[in-house]
Image (cartoon, rainbow over all chains, first blue to last red; front, side):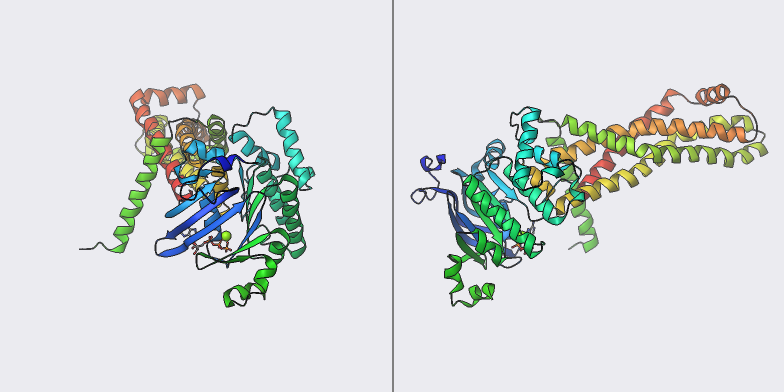
Length: 258
Length: 215
Ligand SMILES: Nc1ncnc2c1ncn2[C@@H]1O[C@H](COP(=O)(O)OP(=O)(O)OP(=O)(O)O)[C@@H](O)[C@H]1O
Ligand SMILES: [Mg+2]
């Protein structure tokens, strides 16, 4: 499926059977605030993994390190066979076309229409398309999230849930192999939250993408993920399926399921 | 010996903005050039602030003329009115007032816009979409404000002189041709050039500070 299997990964060549994302002893601190301390993670192709943690536990920092927006203090991050830190900016851009990122605050460009928002990644990554091909692509991803009629609207004219879905459409437009979701359901009502969760699940099945879903919404995690990683005290504290973790006796794990 | 906090803060800020400016010069002139975005910013920054600058310039010329007239009359030097107002506007007041208004309107709007883009992660989103946000957002805005302020100053001066012409004509009659002949006779090229060049620096400073505060 991916070409990762043939590329040796620095530091962890053996366990790279089919991992699309590999994080090895990641450290990140801001001054004296040690956010991530020795975090490890492996994501297999097609797998949907949730990262669960309290607010401020460093979940956003974690995925910003993965996409290269933050530089880790220590540790190796390997995405689709590329060691993120060793890439130059051109190579990093190439990797970023294969990794979708749904931002916590949607990050829609509010000076652009929905259409321009969706075309932005296509234009900027210099993907060769005629204007009509580009437009068709925009409409196609908008149909995926059920919002084709909003194509000429401004983000300010949309509701929070619609904006989230537009942001999701923008993430999908480059047909990524991995999608990083940063709290896809926060700030939405339970019903809309469920819709988004269902959408995430459908996307995973339809395009066979791997996903890292960051959340503290248990319902969303239960619906979307195959496996859960608990990020507590900057470490991968526990992991397992939803059912396994639910039965856990550990105090710190239990409080998420109450 | 340690510096008082306020001094340390001052030096820190100065260092930061110098580094930011250095970054502008080291990245701004290398490809990829964001020409479309630069033109769009020139339009927004130049065109959108024209009404305000025009209005202020007009009032400035008019009021200056009306206020100076009585003093000149008392010296019997009323005929010097166009020359005096012309020199004042072109040499100093025009560039400075235009730049002040420009700073208030454009500088603060750049700061607010980039600041809100930052907290809503739009700048991060640009970066992951294969765009260097510093070039796309900062370089284009700084260049646009550097290029547009001199143009605005020239337009502002012209409108201001027109205001002054109307001011002269409130009491007394002077033809349009005569008024401008008197203005331009009093001015020489070397009155105009330093003021014009100065406005490039004002524009650069406004763009730079606005972007520094927001980015
Ligand atoms: N750019 C930054 N500079 C300094 N500190 C930062 C920065 N980004 C994050 N932090 C710190 O890192 C910690 C983790 O932040 P992060 O945004 O990852 O939390 P989170 O787990 O995503 O929380 P939430 O669920 O509220 O989004 C916080 O204490 C925050 O103050
Ligand atoms: Mg977060």
